[in-house]
Amino acid sequence: MAKQFQLNSKKNKLKFSVTVTLKEDVLDPQGKVVQNTLVNMGINNLKSIRQGKHFEIDINEKELTVAKKKIDEMCRKLLVNLIIEDYKINIIK
Amino acid sequence: MAKQFQLNSKKNKLKFSVTVTLKEDVLDPQGKVVQNTLVNMGINNLKSIRQGKHFEIDINEKELTVAKKKIDEMCRKLLVNLIIEDYKINIIK
Image 1: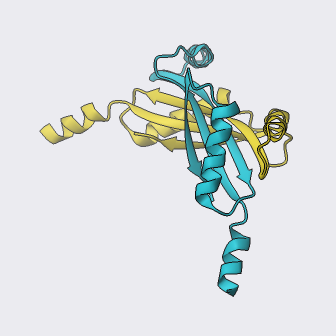
Image 2: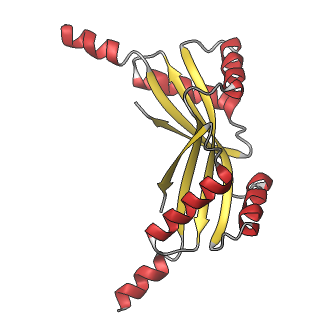
Image 3: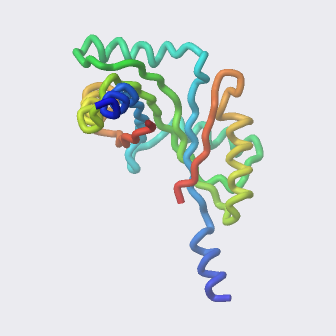
């Protein structure tokens, strides 16, 4: 009982990271500008650079599966443009 | 000898990901807007959301340490504002 409570209070919030990247076939002008700038700055050996978005999300939820589903809903509804972007959800703690 | 060559040709390019996040004490208005929007959309249990940048970098370099040093140089010179941002470098392959 005490252990269960400890577990719950510890796990009462979960932290996720979401990485949103452009699909491979989609042009990335922002990344291209960064790449050209780096080359102009004298950095060689650079093959390609692509830019994406990163979110760190704290959620008040102790159940991992429920939390993951919520995060997935956020991604599909707002954070990610599914036509041109992919996303990956990772749990941090 | 053959094995060494195979290793080199395989490892001739390395792929890194760089995650840039705002330092904890720095305000994140962009993340705040996303958070408010999600709450207005009816997503509850959300505690906080912070937005950062994500880069995927391919580099023509077979030595891991040299490549990592190059990526670090890119971060410090262009990709990251060290006053307000932190960064993490991960190798993908």
